[in-house]
Length: 153
Image (cartoon, rainbow, N blue to C red):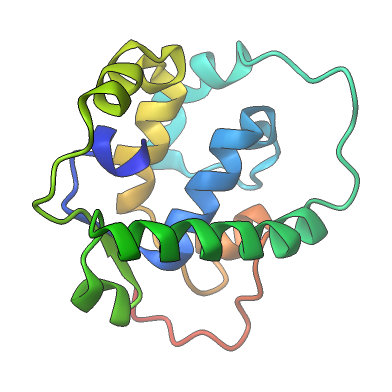
């Protein structure tokens, strides 16, 4: 769903993983500190995301455990030809030219999450926020190690 809704042709793997986690747990977007100034126009929509009934413990641990599921899902998408292998080798997720089955496309188009403002922010605006380094999304979210990143992107 992320690639189908995004206005970008490809998304770096680390950013894709972050977007995927926030798609599953959107209430955690509220905990990004400091929240990027470029995205302050979305604060109203983020504030309206309901909190869950149950608290999630160590979110960094959840992200770590989710990596296995994400890797398996991406490998399946690669095997079916839905994402581009050459881009994946460069740690980028890009849709291939193979169309999704209509039943899946229809479900994405009807999905409430896909049309929500906070999700559009994730798939379109997060792309413009630096991922690596002290001011990057890895650091701001606390989801991934960033200290050893080269601050190129």
